[in-house]
Length: 620
Image (cartoon, rainbow, N blue to C red; front, side, top):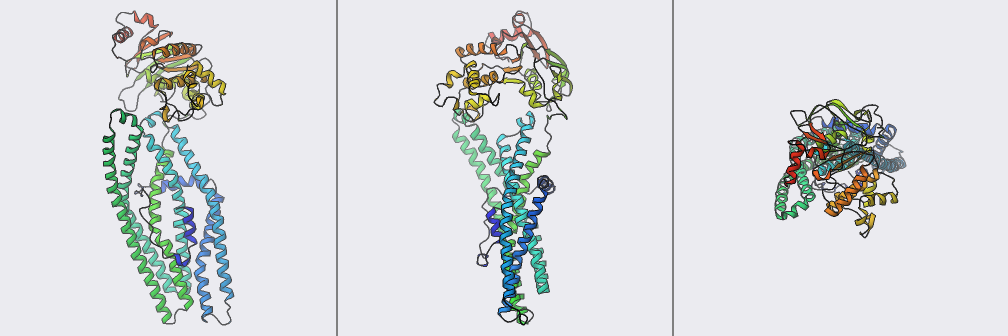
């Protein structure tokens, strides 16, 4: 519900009470039936945020009670005024008394409403920002496995959709359901005091109206909505997937094929939308019939009581105006129930984020890593991937000396990439320990661990930011001169200075505006700027032409000096300058030594790989 709708909820003149039903097709995503226990989970989740500002929350509720009370008194004072003007009031009673009461109630209504809305806007903005930040921070800390198994577009949508769903959830509870319930109670009390039979009838019929709406919403409307929101999510996922992979689509001339796939998704979406929205219109129709019966019943009862002398003209006005005030809330009850269902369903994603284990988390009292030399030691490490039946590493031990340059070689799946991931602590090991400069990396903060190493991947990923910002990502706060120096060392300055915007050039999503070689040079520049004791290179020259590769190899050789370097080698010709080669097979180091020595070892693993590559065979 928008904040303008909140005002309309309260400040609606009588002539506007005959407006049409709300359009059930205004939203592109309708509510799905929340899972079992979802309401409790979402309420507990919301309470974590509400309880952080208890006095402000109490003030908002108190102002709401005053506002609704003032609004509900308007029909009462209107009836009193009519009785005075028609001569049905007590003898000597002046019209001034109900008039002043009406004006005071109206003034209180408008003043408290404006105050409450301004407080609410501040409250809602603060909470939505906090909910979004917490969800983003949580997702950022999830393990590599979680991100590998999650669709990025869906995650973004869950966070943004959950944020706005939280806003709808709050608005619906306070400005919709709480105000409506409070209004029904106050109106029922006022009418019961004036005309007990009509007051009781109003209370009973209103309760029956709510029960019927809840049952139909949950049993009839929600199942169709649930099916529709699944189709909507599938459509959104297909759209994001095709757009993200547009380069592949163009490469295979598959535009028409993707159009057909999306057309099929939209066909399912249309069918789901028609069924879901049709059922909502059915519910709106039933609401109209029930409210018409209530309206007819109350008006008939009022006229009957007046004709028998049991009600004055003012009491008839009280009944009529009370109904019109309540009708606005009853008319929107179905919409509020749908909003509540939708918001609870979509907030569940944020609740899942908050409740889900991080996978790899900092230990209690974790300390920053103090790495100056960069010695790496694996001590009796056992590690198994969740989806694998057998450990990759079993009682694995290895030592890399400080400043040593080591190449990891082996066929795909041999364990060399996993070795690097464990050094970064992207996964937790089952037993043993991994130490850097004598410190167990499981006992230090992940942030300090990863800030101690610079990584140049085979396929660098850049932010859709300027070249300068991408290079400086390795060292926040670096000066422009330091950024330029790092770019020169990586031979990236050569192409950057040729660009119109220079270092301020935006690189596009994931760096798509740059060639593979240019992206790799930016990644190298980041590594130069990071100036860390640990360096990890994953075939950092694979996307370079032969001329540039020679320059970069010289730069890499310079970069490796004085640093512990781990180089994942796919081309054995690029590792001739390392101190030691570790040949991996099935999670074990089956051979190690200098590359020239291993190449001459007859029947050795490295020699066979080297000879196969020399023949042009792809073996790594």
